[in-house]
Image 1 (cartoon, rainbow, N blue to C red):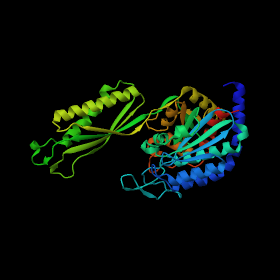
Image 2: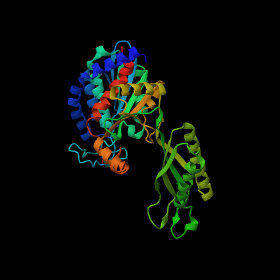
Image 3: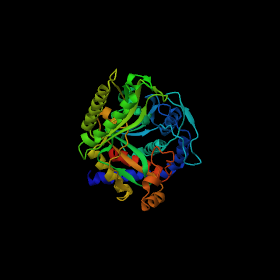
Image 4: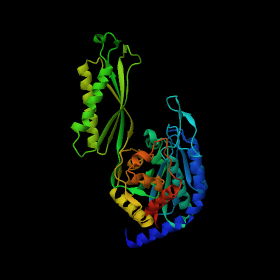
Length: 427
């Protein structure tokens, strides 16, 4: 970026952010409203309606119902590049235990027909609020920038289905092709901090349902059975060697068996067992090799045990790798440091969590970057750090105790989106 362009960008950012205080006045109310009324994946009707209403107030062209509950706002402002910024909307089946006066007490019926507690334990309420704030600030200061800004509110990130649903629902055909895409996530770092990372930042994720078949029998007559409980135990132990003995030291991989279910009574040997496994990787070659190893080992154990049927593998909740474009990330990081200062902007590093945001820019074939926004009370974080108890005392995303501080979290998240957008939309 030339010095002249850098100066123009800095000037545009200052002009757009002059309305930040006025925007913040309604953001806290909207944030609390969304937090108190969380909605499960693909059930985000109220949140989507709120986002659509605000976008229309700001003067955006609004598309609704993309991917069932997705909302897109398009603001065309003359010649220039097209920037897409995305926020996820769905909440989690978690019972909130934060003690906040605006805590969720709601329940909902999930896709399996079960009644579950619902809470915004992953800060998607903050993501929606920040993007709405950025959308308003850009709409009010069109004289300060040129191009097209697209605010995308995505459903069902928590089940790895929302981004794909919006694409399948015609997203590519219904919006201008973006030149670049952005997303952010509030994380359990000190509020006021912004974390960026070049290259892989979030792992690819795969969940696998493995069905093992045996032969049922009376518990007193095991010789008449092919015991799937024993088979499942052998499989679980064997799978542990994929990371420890088949993955090159220094290559990242996580394989967890989170559930093993078989049988219902102590004296009945069941006819099948079901394992739920989860895989995380940063390298697609490592991912492919691990999947091949899982299937090879499971099939071999089943054959060794005399299973009457081959095992079945069902892959679900598959998240893509989030791999930040180096050029885009360097440009945005530089802009963040110019605005926030060097100290608040830190190296986020690689996180083992997973996201489906990258499905959207990947569908358009465009570069993107994804950053983290600190949301923890800085003093509380520092006390925990000084005591060496950050992991014990600081609730992380998906915890029933997760509760970002409203400020400066919303302000920083809103500013970050504006800064990133204007880095590409400056006249």
